[in-house]
Length: 461
Image (cartoon, rainbow, N blue to C red):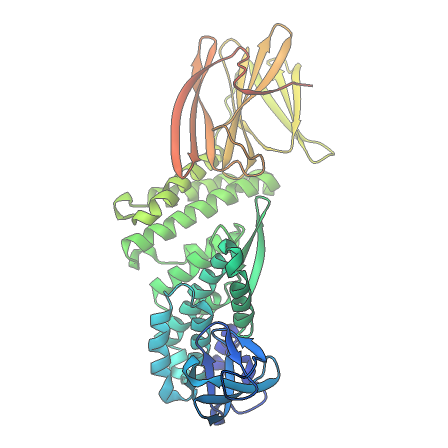
């Protein structure tokens, strides 16, 4: 079982692909310590470089001459000489495992050394005995690999032109160890993300509750993962009571964010008539209510503010239809995939109609006492809820869209809610809350029912 587990870990970490085909324990290896290390045909600085090596690459050592090591590069299928000071020799036996783990602990949080750190982690997994890989040390190595892979992906997204060659080379180096990245499209933009394989392996090993929690947070990162029921259920299995306060808050916030997104998705798909959307919204509210603001780490305060707004946007799933109004909404699906909204009076006579691809919440409709206006919650995207205002004018009925905030990007409006807060003579009270420049802005406005040029409007059919 333990031998099988070691193979399981090696597959997860991709440990030392170059070892395939010969006995690793009978060989001596070296890992490259510096970027742009020359591989020369002869031992001497005057010899031309036959290839350029990058940190983290592993070579087989076949000899030594002067202050150079004679090596064989399996990736390029060529040999040569490399200055010994730019390499660290590896025996990959069990006696070397503690030293490799100590180096890995040091390198885990060193920006710019991710490729080298992942190479050290792979070497440790190859050298360590199965009992250690099945225990805390093996989990620690996998967690370090995941953290460094995530940081390398972030560096690749933010790299400048002068660093592009190095980042590209580092991505190629870690790919030889089985570390994979995926391109994820979010709001029309591509983002490079680590595929999370090391974290998934942690979840089936004898990890501590804190290690499992950190792995789940990494696997459910909203920047790289689409919200799905499987992730939400996995987060539910984390026992947050046994976690430190700051980590417990992170788990609860991630749960709240996932369930609020699932409420939106379920209403979109109208699963079982949409009856599961309120249950997801309830879970989101429950998770958010359990967050202890006094235990929030400073770096989590922005995330907490965003989650609060996101959960507020999903709270509309709990709305109950108001009966006996002079106006009401009937929503039906069209052949074009849109939702068509029919505004009707008490006698079921149609007053106006509007079709949209946005998510409509019919139960949120609230009419004023005079029967001349109706407010309706509509969500164009997850986390962004607008208030649609139907209003009777001399020329007929008009529709005005009241957003949470004015945005410059139609593709990615952000996170926010515009919520009905009451009627006043000739006016509607609107409570707005939106994340702008990293801060939540709130306000309550009295908006005239008459056309206001500052507000976005749309003509009705």
